[in-house]
Image (cartoon, rainbow, N blue to C red):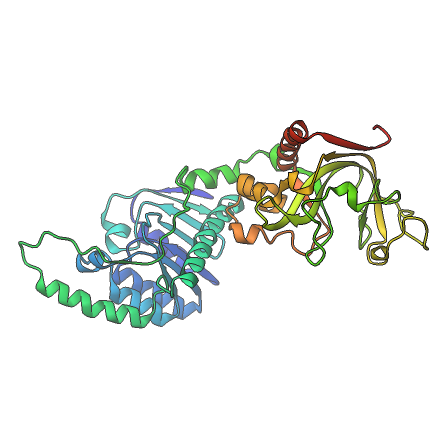
Length: 397
């Protein structure tokens, strides 16, 4: 059964899929029990599995024995990599990119066998499992960044566990029936930019049933200039072209994928209004498509030396530009912040980390975008035309 509701004995379900694992286990669980951790460590060792875990590292949890330091220590000794996150509530289990279990149950004996818990087991449903995997790696990546910037406070080591055991044992021994104050020491990453607008199950189902219309491919981002020769943001695109280049855009290899009437958004490698290095979309062109004769040969009026490296071109039927300097355009970083992974077909409806997304276009002269992104950019371009004016080049001008 591809999707199965789990209403009892989560432990039996997990034991079943853990025992069949051949590659990796990813776990997000605030509480980790001693018995369950021991069982998992045996699977890791027996099957030589990669295991990554996101959990909490709260002193009061250990004092109250709702989470086990001994269990975490056994997992570390078996080779598991463990990160701590403050404010964690998600419970998610992913096995070999095949099974995903989204549940209310912590990875403790109580959560697995005794408590009233509800979960969903997903098997061989690629869209849902991919969404779960992206969720895990997005969270993992954010914790890694925090950890790097904060002296490894989120990375759980054997030494950190042993040190905490000593402190917890002393705290337990000094507790009396009259003790009312909780120990509020919490270690781990503290992330400020978590999106609480929807839960993981909602996002996963959205991934499975996403609109194919919105996800279909649209036009292209076409990058002009490069990181070593950035366009001056105070100058317009018109100031960088001549009589030969003004109706064409150039490529290092044959752009055979660009067809008649494909829309190309000209993106100058430049700086945005805040001086941040980024491509800036300054207009859109309507392509005549590429054919084998679209190649620069010889030297002529309008020839420039860079054409040796970019000899292939596509002509525009019509080119519409935002009037004025490049900084009047649309920052690609602005797009990433607003529509996130929905900009590209391969990242559509994923939780790709922002830092990874902003590197997506590096070393590319062009990149395909989704229809959704094309429509979004068109809307913003029209707003910029209204604000700054429009320059038109081409046969329909």
